[in-house]
Amino acid sequence: MPDDPAKKRKGCLIVAVVLLLLLLIPVTLFWLMVRSFEQQETHVDGGSVLEINLSQLSGEGPAEIDFGPLFSVPLFSLWELGRVIDHAATDDDIVAVRLLPSGASVGWAAAEEILSHLDSFRDSDKPVHALLESDIVVDLEYFLATGADRIRVPAESAAAINGLAAEAHFYRGTLDKLHIEPQVFMYKEYKSAGEAYANYEMSPYMRESLEVLLEATHDLFVKRVSERRGLPIDSIHAFLERGLAPARALVEAGLVDNLGFREDLEEELGGIDGSDGYRGISVGDYLASLPDTTRRGEKIALVFGEGPVVTRASSSLFPLLSTRILAGNRVAADIREATADDQVRAIVFRVNSPGGSVLGSDLVRRAVVSAQAAGKPVVVSMSDMAASGGYWVSMEADAIVAQATTITGSIGVLFTKLNLDGFFAWLGTHVERVATSPAAHVLSTGPLDESEEAGIRAWMDEVYASFTGHIATARGLDPEKVQEIARGRVWSGQDALELGLVDRLGGLREAFEIAKEKAGLDPLVEYGVTVFPRPKSLFTRLFEGDLEAPSMPILERSALIEWARGLAAPQVQARAPHIRIH
Image 1 (cartoon, helix red, strand yellow):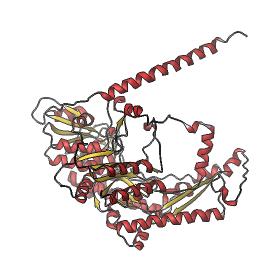
Image 2: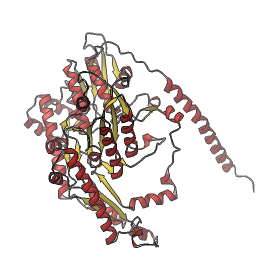
Image 3: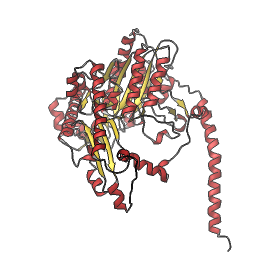
Image 4: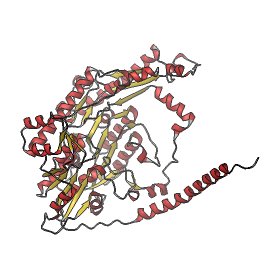
């Protein structure tokens, strides 16, 4: 049979693609190596305007791997943004801030943190001008814009500044259609993280918690707008009730100053110091001009714990393709490394997590206790969320600082398992099991029997008692009071302060102040800061050889089966519900 020309062409194409990839990989790595060694020196011209584009904000702390060489516009973290704004306030070469709040991927507590820095910047008698450059301006974007002296909005934009809402999806009906039985136990009645799978609709307890959180955030929003814009609260409420409104309505209501575009904003800022023309400098470029925080001598460690809690996680070649996670083994190792550093006098632990693995959370808690035993005070700074396992890792700290809108508490535990027997039968798959003892099937994809359920509830009893007991001891609270404020209920940072779950309202700056006080350091001295995890360039990570070969187990048949088994297996977690206030 003669050779098929189409098959030949296809084979040649495959070979060409493989050869191209083999050529590109070393070339790319060499390019990254060169870029990693480049010394980026930034000169700040006099009369410069600091350009803050919040769509470039990514995460709480610097990325563990620096992908800067891959991007023409580098991303920056919340910690780095705070440093930049505070330094610019005392820099004679920076005369103003141009703020673009649109596209910011932050929660309300992180927004509070940003506003605190902008408020301090304005106290230096330098103006902040904001442009709400969105098709539809939403409440959080406008909240961020209140950090400005003047606010513009394009004439063709609209405003959905119409109050706050929280939305929850419930999958029980979908699971029923798939013949999957959710087996969910929540400790206790307010522990709503499992409701999405167990319930068809919101429980009264979940609804009550969400309404309280929304009301607290709403009140802070209205108060802030009233104070910054000089508007009566009644008029703000009246605008919120309008729903969608044209940009001109924002001007008429006094919520923004005038209509305009980016060039209008830059024209106004161009002559602000009497100079000729607009000179802007981005956050990334300005950050490169700042002095290194890791100088020698006495210093404070800043450890970041961000994302869902897992017990352990290995390095990945593609960290941008996955969400940030708080891996107990890694964060505990970071705290231990900071503890072992003789120059570190105190540790500030920044937490932004809905919780997750109980064991992973406890690994971090134990590291905190070890640091304290070594004479290193630990101060927790809570961001948007530090709930359930996020509170577990925080509770032993010498002091806890939270924003008024931080979501915290959720002191409880959750068990989830999916009985997939009905699903497999629906697919036509027959399942049979053989075991050496009746309880051997507890990790199977099948249902739990009464004895297995009793064992799991006993496990949950132990974990819940441990959680509440640690809180009572660490926070100096009466055990009965802890039982009252626990029950799986989420609280705002403001409520948590009144209940004794946190010590002070504020952000990282307040946490550093307390850390200095606890460590007996001079409050007027600016000490060096060592950040964990330590950011490294991609080339450095490759050179050290601590990156594992990437894998995509979901595409492997055996791994897919293990994923299904893991989904059905018993999981007792300290995890808060997914809450998005918009």
